[in-house]
Image (cartoon, rainbow, N blue to C red; front, side):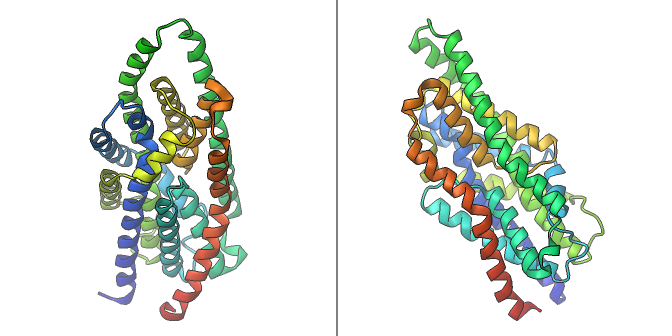
Length: 333
């Protein structure tokens, strides 16, 4: 096996590690509502999430092609394999740090910021495809706003519809409904997040000259899907605690509304081939639902901490990827 192929093997291993970490890092987002309201036991929620993540990951490839070709041009990178390795190491480090502290940060922001930073380190500012990059960032910003609004509207509507109903009856109905929305949420998570690793692996295959297009090979789809499903099966209880209890006290009707709002936004983005942050969509929908329920009950200090993490992720991980690229270039070039 030649030197280039060894680097590709390293990249595939790192990409699948990223997907595995993404699975247990972001699983909490998909099942936090159903676990916190006891609609599902943690064990059943994780099995459901892992299964639906796998199905979702195998269903689409549009987001993978966007990641692989719209941020930087893999056909023009002089040291493309080093760029990809630096990208993955930076994104993995950031995901582990935020997971350790229980902060629901965005794996999407991490991988996109890291790829942009590594490409700039390699090629200068011309290494970025500004049209594609700005479109992605625009929707990373807009998607949580849309999720907030939809979550607010759904909860506002449900409050009016069930205003005179028995709270016990309402909770029972929506607790059962949360099983469906948790499955939908997990499916959409797979459709968007698993594709990021697929896109990175395919980008490496193009850079290495193994293939001449950004079509996703079947083995890449399966390996990324399985890695995310396995990561999902591990779970991320620190983030579940943050999402399910520290923003506001969530009842089944709130969890149902938040899951429905965020999953709809994520699936719409997937159909449009846009990589959005599942973390941001889910957190924003929770904030929207909480605001509609009772604005004063939302713990805005925790929400502010989460938003700060959102804002700093792309630049911080971008700089981290640059530094890693410079270190790697001493040994790989």
